[in-house]
Length: 277
Ligand code: SAM
Image 1 (cartoon, rainbow, N blue to C red):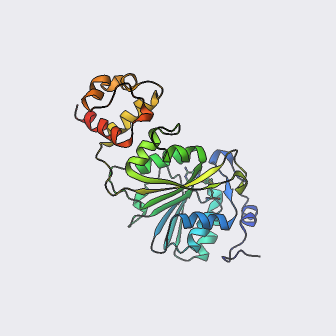
Image 2 (cartoon, protein in one colour):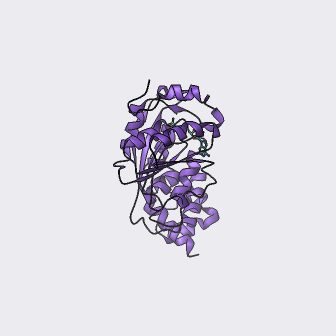
Image 3 (tube, protein in one colour):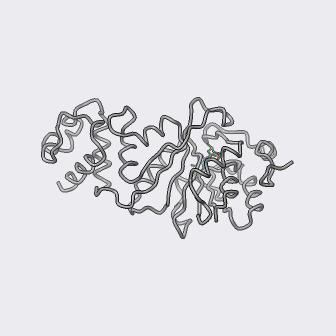
């Protein structure tokens, strides 16, 4: 028996290639091709696109990306057990799927593409934030990728997309909001995964801003880390090591404010002032 795309059902693939999910690799698989098709649609038209998928596992999302017409998918998977199952998909879509057996954290991902890819992934929870931070803090902007469509735990998705004044607003929200337009697309309940995680997940999208506010990345990272490292304290205390009250007064920010009250533009102002010191 085959699925509508002509490939065997994913549960059969997992059994045949002995892909019992491993917790330490963040393996929560999606077997519902309607859901993986919905994730692919959230990334917009793929027909002229190269796609980078991190962590294809048995290939549920990979198949959806190829069915949706992606010109070429490069899939980086750290679990060598999955490679044979992925090669089966590659044979079904000749010349369109390149499978790389390796760790996405240590591979030079931009070097795999001639034109900016869309990055679409059901990320392993244990390395998802680190990968996102790497993609957001590239030296060049616009970046080497076109857009990000990523699955995170709902709580992390809220932190990435949060606006000032909310509890979830923090360092990730500032870095993401500075360089991208961010949006939660839809939630995915635990039971959609095998095995089910403890919490709800969300698919989010990040579209690079053509012209983010001017701010040196290094000092922006410094100032957000210090401000949110002690988020309950007033900025004159949390930023004491970076110039504290003097710095804040100089740029017209009230020293009694707290990190969660500053918008992205205020953080950029602080980062610019700090870089001139
Ligand atoms: N995309 C598949 C799906 O939706 O069913 C699997 C998603 S699962 C949440 C995460 C996948 O990322 C696993 O297949 C895991 O082996 C892989 N993975 C974990 N760490 C990785 C890393 N550092 N580099 C590449 N892949 C990794």
